[in-house]
Amino acid sequence: MQKVQSIKKSLSQKTRYTFDDLLQIMELLTSPEGCPWDKEQTHESIAKNALEEAQELQEAIESGKAENIKKEAGDVLLQAVFHGDIGRRNGTFTTHDIVDSLCKKLVSRHTHVFGEDKAVTAEDSLKFWNRAKENENRQNKT
Image 1 (cartoon, rainbow, N blue to C red):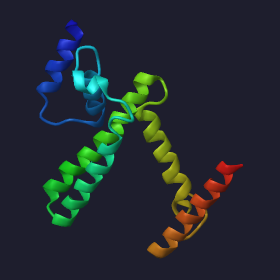
Image 2: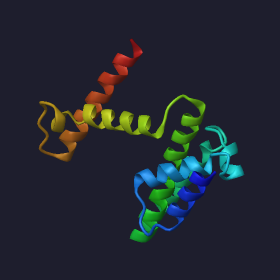
Image 3: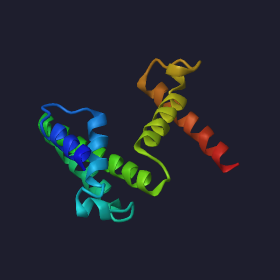
Image 4: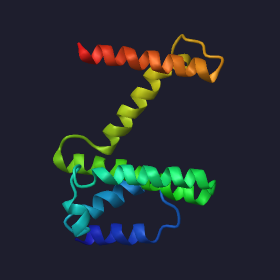
């Protein structure tokens, strides 16, 4: 209990946070000492939140206000981190697994950056992305 109190105090006194702090805060919120609402959530119970937050991000982008975009992008990020924490608690995957999966996708689909393809235009880049995605989909079906 003393360790939890120390972590809470440390986190509450920061003036700037990191991604690791975000993961620690999420883990604390869903711990026995955390938030009753957060602890009860499941993938299913928060599924609709991802769409709502993405819509709010779109609206912020359309407003052109950087502060609003930053805030709403954070809310979208929270959804991914929340699902990672639920996966951690369920023993199925973690936020680190989500990041790993995303990085693998970015590397494998940017064949013009990490492979032999050469893209000169944005259209070329998109063509290579779509081709890599189609190849992955074919491989996943077999």
